Length: 346
Ligand code: TLP
Image (cartoon, rainbow, N blue to C red):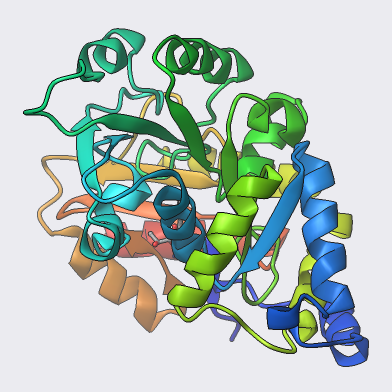
C-alpha cells in the first residue's frame, strides 16, 4: 500500500531525471570554486532571481543563518516576524552563533508585518539600544498558512528600509510557490531584497540544498561564513545537478500542488469535526482545526491515519498541517480524504 506523506514538501524524493543527472554530473572541488555543476547552478539561481551571484548551501536553515550573519555583526538587531521560520524552527542559530539580537514583531494573518509596526521598531541612534541593521521577511509564509506576500508589500518595506539605511533579507524557501500562486516571476518578488534564500529540496524535489543570492560582496562574505559553519562542500556538483533539473523542470508544475491542496481542502471541509482556516489554502499548505465538539486531540487522529499509511503534521493540540507536493497524485487526495472521513467518524 502506498504511503501518502502529507507532512511536508521536505519529504519529496528526487525524480528519475534528477537521479540520472546526479549520476552523470561533472564535479570538482567546490571549496576551490572548481565544481562546474555547482557554478552552473549558482549562476542559474542568480539569473532567475535577478541578483549578481549565488551560493549553494546544504539547507534553507544554513542559507538564512549565513545570510543574516553576512548582514549583521554581533550586537546588531534583525527585525523578524514572530512566526518566522528563523524565529521558531532554526534553533536560535542567529543568536547562538552570531550574537545577533532579534526583534520579533507580530505577523499578521497575511504573513506581513505591518508597516506601522516596522516603522515603530526601528531604533534611533542611542548608545543604550542595539542598532537595527536588517529586516527579514518570509515568502511564502509557512506558519501563516503558506500565504504569499505580494511584490507591492516587498516594495513598501524596501522604501521604509531605504529611509533608515536598513538591509532586507527574504527567507524565500518557497518563493517559487509564491510566484506561481500570484502569476508573477520570482525575480519580481526578489527585487526589493538584498538577499534571498530559496530551497531546492522542498516542492522542487531535489534531495538536498538551498541557494542564497545577492550582490558579489554579500556572497563573498556568506561564502566565508558557510566555511566557518562547516558547509564548504567538495564534489557537491553531484547534488547540485539535481538542483539544476529542479530549476529547469519543477517550477511551473507547482501549480498542480496548489490545485491539489484546494481539492483536498474542499473535500476535507465536508467532514464533520474539521474546521478549515478561512481563505486557506493559498499555495501548497493546508492548515485546519478540530471543532470544539470533537472529543479527541489531533495526535489521536494522526496516529490512526498513520496506521492506514497516511502521514500528516500537527501544529498544536487540535490543529493540523498538510502539504501537497510532486509525489502526491490525484488518487492520493481521494484516498486520504476517505481515510480521514472514516477515522473522524470513529
Ligand atoms: N520548514 C520545514 C520545517 O522546518 C518546519 C517544513 O516542513 O516546512 N524557511 C522556511 C520558510 C521553511 O519552511 C523551512 C523548512 C526552512 C526555511 C528551512 O529549510 P531546511 O529544512 O532546508 O533547513
